[in-house]
Image 1 (tube, rainbow, N blue to C red):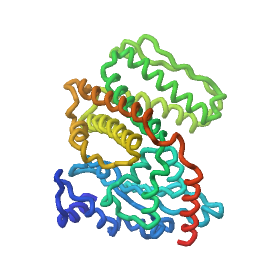
Image 2 (tube, rainbow, N blue to C red):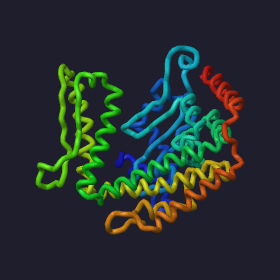
Image 3 (spheres, one colour):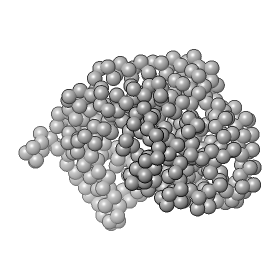
Image 4 (tube, helix red, strand yellow):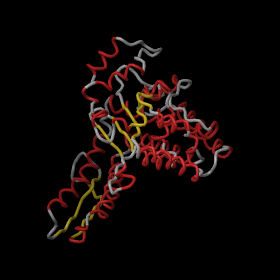
Amino acid sequence: MDRIIGQIATDGELNEMGVYKLKDFKKLLDTEEYKFLKEHPRLGNRIMLLGVGGSYAYGTDYENSDIDFRGITLNLPSDLLGLTKFEQYEDRKTDTVIYSFNKMIRLLLECNPNTCEILGLEKEGYMILSELGQELVDNRSLFLTKRAAKSFGGYAQAQIRRLQNAIARDSMPQAQREQHILNSVQNSLEEFHRHFASFDKGSIRLYIDRAENPQFETEIFVDANYRHLPLRDYENMWGVMRSVVSSYDKIGKRGKKDDNHLNKHAMHTIRLFMMAIDILEKGEICTRRTKEQGLLLKIRNGGFRKEDGGFLPEYFDILSDYEQRMERASKESALPEEPDMEKVEAFVEYVNRKALEV
């Protein structure tokens, strides 16, 4: 992929960040790696739109940024009139995800951030945009409601929890961290209980006691008693617990890559609030954050990190300000509480009738 991008960039122009303009990425669609866009029976001329995703969509890209594409394709007649079902097409090699039109509508009705941003790209951000795709973009206001506060806010809060957990666990005393691990393992096993009926064939007890390992004060012990338990269930159960313990053991050994992930979480938290405020105050989806680019890049590049790995108070001041702005925007927004389903259904029926003709 890097080789292809380099060839494309040779003929392109640099923007103010030294990154090649989005229009050059259209040439990628003609390369061997992207031939599935033309050849797959669910794609080809059924694609309504295909646009850049990730950092190139947000305006926070840099020289080595990954290229993501996100799109929407029309459902097949067999999906609409027959028994076939289709949710999305994903090509992991190129990090391309293309949603079916009907699934996209369901997600848009919930103001899902990952799908809303597809309809808020700048014109040059679309590699493919059919007439129906343009009509969907033109009608994006159908899906903008006060639900944005909950959906975008929920995604932002999830990012905040990741930050808080990672930072807090780094500084936990060993005994307290062991209790945190125990809680996580027990929560994971509760989920395991719901998926594997074999748990009625025995029992497992997890508890904390004085450590046998001289490096620990306390550690987790297990008492297990099973009869006639399928080997694969046994392997899966221990795999769940091993995964939790391993992830915690890596904490405190974070490298530059892990710090970069935390910086990205911190940046996306602020970006999500920015997008939600635009939707609630202006009724607009603005995916590319040109005006706030400097702030977002500073966060992503670690400009608000302390030497001990935590975040500076200034970051949390900015975060608090955006949270308050979103709450205020939600209360004062002129957007409806719920989408006008009569209009949405009329538009969906119109597009799906067109899909039968393709």
